[in-house]
Length: 209
Image (cartoon, rainbow, N blue to C red; front, side):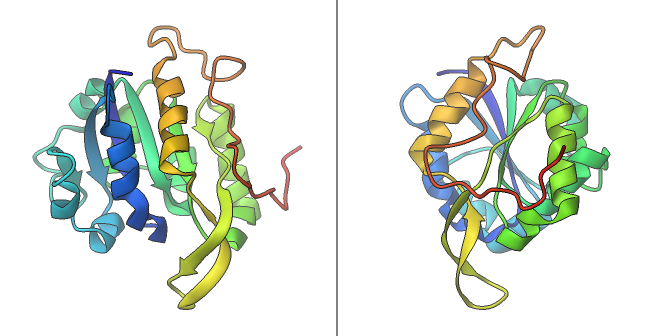
């Protein structure tokens, strides 16, 4: 599936699997990819490392003044955020623009696909549930995270947390997202990617009415 994909990357511990996801997205007839990293993402995974897999990597704190967010947003056929933290979900839902990625999110005129990854308690928090509901109501696609044993940096041990789907699953969802018509998008309903994945997903403790 060809096209132009802008990949937003946030500072979740799940960023450690990003190289495998990037390879899966790019292989075969994958789209042309550009990457925008937040400051926290760049602190966890050096942009030079991603640069070995993708030649066009931009970062908060380094490229804001030399990169025009409007032209970057217009370049992308589709914008995908992987991993998406609670912070970027809140910024996108609230229309905030504190960095390059959040500014590009505001300038992009098409639906955005988010793959959340965070502590399970954070995902179940009422504020995060409200932000997810707001994004979906605005026409964006927020995938349900996958429950799995992941390394929790704060406690330095393994916990059941909300992580990313497998690289193959992410590729399949992104391919479906890229197939949506670019003109007159209708992101919700039968044509949009299913927000659940064929892994174990985490139910929200606080459901929106």
